[in-house]
Length: 389
Image (cartoon, rainbow, N blue to C red):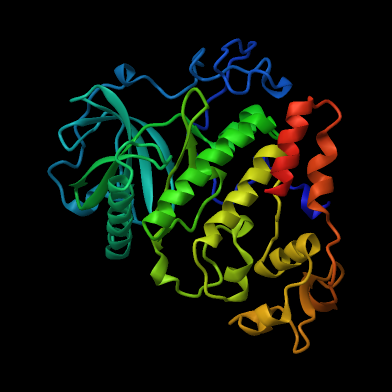
């Protein structure tokens, strides 16, 4: 199996179980405003807003209001063993939000979909786990979101909007605008294993760069940008950066080798160099490649293999750069030759091989230009610009 051919739709490292029963109905997309309608990849696949599946997220009217069975019990009864709130479908949160669907669960929180009974709008509510560490992380995310919103009052920078927050049974709850699906789901549904149209990638790229500009303006690092953490509207022509649970002030940049999900992790993190806003730009670059090709750019099984894949694509890191890295000796010898860690197929034990890498062996341009046979002149021009990005 070629490491470079791991398909984005198969990535499950941090994928949640949101809307797992949804099966799209199939018919030809005719909406002239659908940014994917001119791409053969999307013909015969419906947009969720055009025709609802009977197995889609339930309508709020089909989920009657219920009272939590432990309403008179101890606070501990509301939570599972890991501190996640046991939310009930039909439950009313904060005397306002009628919960009607579970969207998923992550390290920091669980997420539900609810109807705001005051505005009759759908919202997504992030319910932070009930322990001190998670609460502090949630408050940190809340404060960064407030800064970002204050710097973008007209909502033009493509970062998820936080409506308000409240506390419920010892849990910090963040109320967000509700969006249709994330980019991982877009790839699975509309570009499985082949990617999406270059015009769509261009529009998404412009919006992602606007979100990066807002983060930079507010001196914040997202530190977990990937398709799973980018939501799109029902029309699929607008995206929003979401899930700032790993975000921090740029000045906090603590050296750690496991910041950012691995496939989207910049080399300076792995080597142990001081990092800044460029780590988010790297993640966006990996994401854009994935959107266009349907394949993960650096599908390394470890930090060590990530470095190997990066050098195969871009060439060797300079000795000057490697000298400054806190973790360089984990991956390079004293002469800065690469120490590749792999598992011996016979003994099943880890072996270390010295590999001398000087020039790139995987050309990014060639890989991106391999899909040009059926392109129009305009699409070819856009792709050439994309390669140079």
